[in-house]
Length: 518
Image (cartoon, rainbow, N blue to C red; front, top):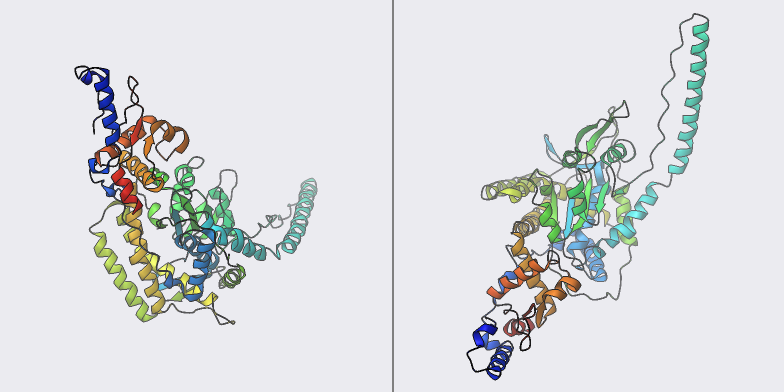
């Protein structure tokens, strides 16, 4: 829809004709019949629809708990389930490993990422875990630590005194031309307090905690994952390699420049949970695929309408369940604490094998990040099956023994989550991030229009007040608006009054607004 040019009207009969032509143009902007049918697909880019979380897989009690907290937090259930799974896997930690065969076992630790725009409910969805459950679990973990610390400090002072005496004996021996005595044992290091949730921390500190204070593992949490993913190598070139290794649970050695003894981590594995916005996710995924991102399970539901919950649920039940998981211990051996293996039943092994073959076949028709995600699907199902089995157990009444096998029904629940939710969600996440930046900007503006129903898009107001991701520069806003003109969402900038330059204001299609209001 072209705006009349002042030079084109000079031959039309003077001022009255010019004014009439501008008035007719303005009136056309308000008649839906003069507008083409808008292309609604412009909002979605290559993004597939969000799959529905199969919440039944959590069992009746945990499903009700997740739904209750989601309602109280005004967020989709996905944003409660993601931190719950990551936290439960970390609290179980190396106390239990799922085993599919004599040669295949995995740590249970899960990496979960909540994706969504600001205001979609990512952070409120974490409140049950990070404000209530995990702080209480950490407090219970540390109840005996003050006594242990006092005993350790006394032992350290005794060891220091023995070293001072030894030094004196060495000097005396040298004066008497005698052989010096053997040194006493080294002074022990002061113990580190139990830790469970970590955020901004060096890889050396993480390694020390896993080696000495948290042998079962820890949960890493960042409210904004993009900062960690984009800046992890700022202070240590080996950080990315360290975190790639921190998924498999294999032995790891960290050499320290200022310390003669390396840190030996018997099983390097942590849980992970964080949030990220789609625009930042696109930045992160421009990096080469080295397997780090495919370790995450993505949770990116459609937003829901905001409402304030009337009956916020209590957290005591969730705390009691997590406390049962906390009390799971590693087994003892001559080589130190070891995970207790929890095998799949024979029928569960068959189900896992079928899933693995299915993912292997589908992987042949994919590439890039999606190919990596499918390669990790069978391992994800194995890990999740152990976590679900123990969540079911934690929700039981009474004091039954922990699970000693993973049942076929539990493996089927985990396989359903992987095939019906995790893989489709990965397609949604990776497909969106792969779009060129101009298309992303166009879709961002389209989604804002669909949400706000404005009658016009004022470039200056968009730049100064609205400030959408990627649309804070006038040129980007103009480019997105022009793309929406082509799709029937907007018209060309509306003319100003007679003898004024047209303003940078794009009218919104009345036909579009009618469609959105239906």
